[in-house]
Image: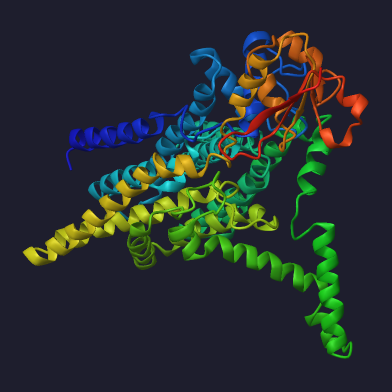
Length: 547
């Protein structure tokens, strides 16, 4: 393939993928989730004052936010986006579009370096296939339109892997190789500063690629193994040093406690269940010595963990249903489109035949990426496993390459007609996904995306006079974030309000609470009460005026 044709084709597909992500970026999904709204508040205060909503420097290892203690990567990059485009939901979500672009470019570089067994033309076709797949795959498309940390984190992981592979090229000079290794660690640490789970995923991926390069070598020796081990351990040491500001932050323990409090196979409740099951089966086995081994509580822990891992590798999840959470998918499609499944199988088979080491590396990468998500009780989870997206996209891309080769090898008209028929099926599948996403999904997911919460703010503010006291009795106690993000308050006002607390329930004559817990005399302090509406067509109603 001529280089000019390849570059023009690649640029065209990339721009198409970019346009799909920019189309209605601020409108679809239909609302900002509370996570995004909290970042929007920090974004506003950082852009205008250089400090977060609590008055802390924007260069801090953990953002306290409203008490969920966010990693700093996304808020900081979102603030730069706000400086360029103005503070809005669009500029906040643009960060994920940027992350997709970085992921795509880095992914192309990684595939080009990994596919050594292919000719130049084959690698060009593989690159074009990857561009098409990452542009249209639901997993890639969906998360590149919402401001969740894991999308940006996986982009930094891919950049890190790219620099790692560049450092391992035989043609790399020693000095340049060291620079690439340092950049690899730097971006690996950036991933950890963007999404907390990436702190554990990146070292695992690093080990995967050191093992891959060692296995792929024709002349393996103990010396080369020791050399690679030394480099790997040095990188992990530098990585640990770079993460010291994070692990020594005043908010680190609070952030760990918050995340460990989530339901998981390691939680106290889960351990009690595992111990109960262990004791039950031991009793059934008359507490024999063997039963103490076979029915040990750790066996049940591993069983629960294995079940969660299996959820993430199940074909139904990957290609048919996806994540049932409407903030993580449409609920009607898999992470990949169903029509991509034959390509996934073909890609896996072709690598099995031609490059088993690469197939093993990609498969292990995916498994490493889903380990943290499999510890949690809520599985499968598309957002927490985004670090494993690249291996799946790659295997589908290798399948597309195999499909093109099959097409070129079958010259008969009817054979090519059958193959082209499948291409039409894929095109229809892609069209139907985007038609559903920009249509019915926007209505189906309104509640999941807390659409209309900004309208609640508008309704309350236009109904009341500034001096009137309002009690807001709403089903979601984080509604106060939308009032803070409304743009009514200056950074100084927000920082003074939140200086001593992560959450506020009373400010500017607004009180957020449950009206049923208040006495009549307490209720008489308020001019009116805004309550959750029983009418599904509206979120809130001004129930009654008390004065």
